[in-house]
Image 1 (cartoon, rainbow, N blue to C red):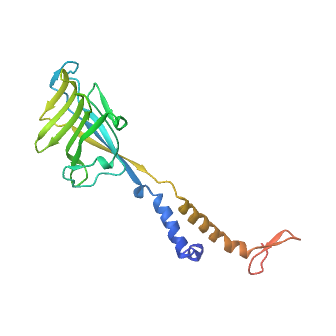
Image 2 (image 1 turned 30 degrees about the vertical axis):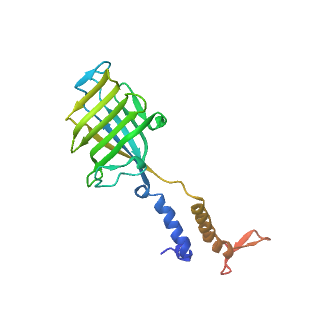
Image 3 (image 1 turned 135 degrees about the horizontal axis):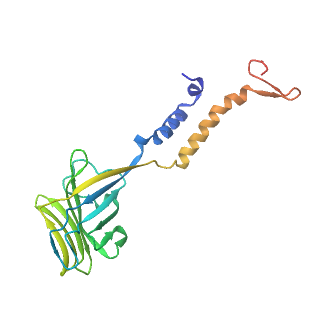
Amino acid sequence: MNRMWIRLAPACRIGLLVLLWAGLPGSSLAETSYQYTGEPFNNVTGAYSTADRVTGQFTTAAPLPANLALQDVSGLVTSFSFSDGHQTITELDLGSFWLFDFMVSTDSAGEIADWRIRLFVDGSDRLIQTVSDSFGDSDNGEIDLSNYGAIANTPGTWVIQSTPVVPAASRAELAVLAACLLALAAPALRRVRWRGQTGSMQDEHGEWV
């Protein structure tokens, strides 16, 4: 084993291992986006057409847990955006809509199996929703009672995309790294002294280098 590694204090060795682990892709956090594509509406009126559909996505700081049973995951969601082709509702509209449902079930792999996502704009008839659970499947978009689109019994599909996020080193981690570098350099500095008159150096065994 490398002698420099052995000389390091145990705490310093642990600190270096932690810093190394934090920088590995497999140990980083994974921001995860769940992207939904619904089927085209087949029941439309007003501005809506059969070319319109519900699409959207929501993002979590880490993948959803496996084996959820239609649980509210709104607390895990960091952003979302859903559209029906005529309107879009995102997390930036928090002052103008209220979240009625944001629930999902996941399978053993953490993929979405069932869902109930309903966004209603407060004080209006506007809504976007996509539902697929034991009670049935439906996608709906509505501006008002004269302009809406819907499809039933034909659920859309979800695609998962994960983006590794390596956390920045904290001040404590940087302090550990600096201390370890000093610990590595100190023995070498002690072994070598300067011989001013010749400009050469002598190691701890008295040999000039």
